Image 1: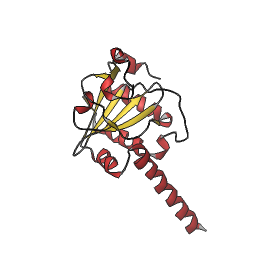
Image 2: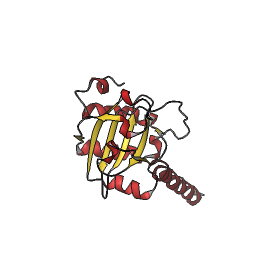
Image 3: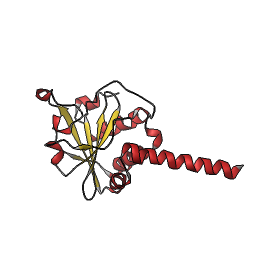
Length: 173
């Protein structure tokens, strides 16, 4: 009985981890780059209103502020949060169009993995593209948007620490 329970529990854990690897990161290769990233930076994003014909989900439709290096404690916490199955609202269907405010850049080889965060509807999307190309062309979005309601407080706290002089970020609850 105990052995059967452990086997079922282990298979659920693998399936849960596979959900994150496959559904959020689009596969093992991108997930491995995310986990192994040597450095993590963040950029504030501002939607360019003059480009309203463009989709909000396209990274080229945003203005970027200078990248900020994220210290090791926050980088470790971000990786931990984004790897956990419990960090996502898997059964949530949101009727909103994300307006990304923060772009996390996990600097891996051969190219970075980018995670765009929308704090208006608590969704994120993962992008895979060449270094600095994402600002000029449509970066490849790995997966559809994922609900991060369960970890919103932690992500808001990290964003506030990264951008202490940004009034919009500091106003997040």
